[in-house]
Image 1 (cartoon, rainbow, N blue to C red):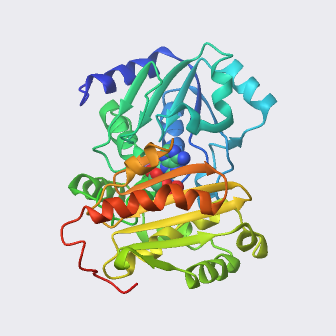
Image 2: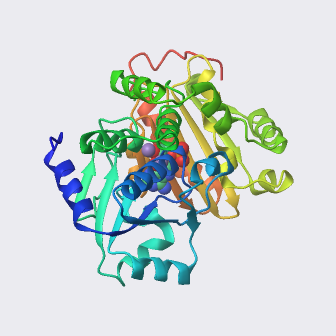
Length: 342
Ligand code: AMP
Ligand code: MN
Ligand code: MN
């Protein structure tokens, strides 16, 4: 088999050496996390391997249709013990940070299990025996796609759809800066394999309860424009979530909305689902790299899309994050002449 890198070769060998696999991904999984797991599991099943998937957090409703045939279990201490005991290898997808797999992390210390990491984040530890970490690729799904291709295996329709979901969600529907020729080429190949883009995207996007839009409306009505219109800030409070019966994953897509405002360089969302737990999401519209702002607080992500989980109030989180963003914005050429209205 010809593989693109020695690490990929090591991963193919790793998969050949083991029989019973457990797959997992990061907390609050997104389309890339779930899509990559599903396609990876189906690939392993095609090789005659045993596969289980266990995540810290439940699968968002938008992606449950992908799990027909490869159920995804949600963390429970006893179930997790059992799954670790049964498996001889763990494959971690879409994160290279040990703490990002949530409550599964503490079971790693109790079991001598071989670990492989497949991820595309630049801020990583790579805690596996084998680490296929490729920040040049738009999505973990892109790495999985290329691994399957290298192995010579064929894609069934659901695997192709799962990979397509991973790709279009992580590229913001082919709009973010990670959207390159390779991403479009992969999309074209998946469409050729039978994926219907209109059908698949509507299955993912048309799943919101009406309350989510009312919630977006309330949160966006309080949008703040700082730093001469270059920084857009939105906050979601526990009351907002409670009023509409929503959970953390219901912010999906919210942080992208202020990107449409002329002159915006960075969008920051402070989302407090439970009092004292704030999830910060940052987006750059292209000129600034904001991942370091999150990485230095224990989070991470990509240059133009990053996040961090923080303890304390929204005011505390703002006090740590906003001055850093203002400093970055101030470093831009021509930052003295505001581009938007405050
Ligand atoms: P989000 O704002 O949750 O959509 O995340 C944007 C990007 O940042 C994704 O690539 C995430 O994997 C990454 N990210 C979000 N939260 C964290 C975190 N707490 N630690 C590390 N990376 C994160
Ligand atoms: Mn992800
Ligand atoms: Mn990803």
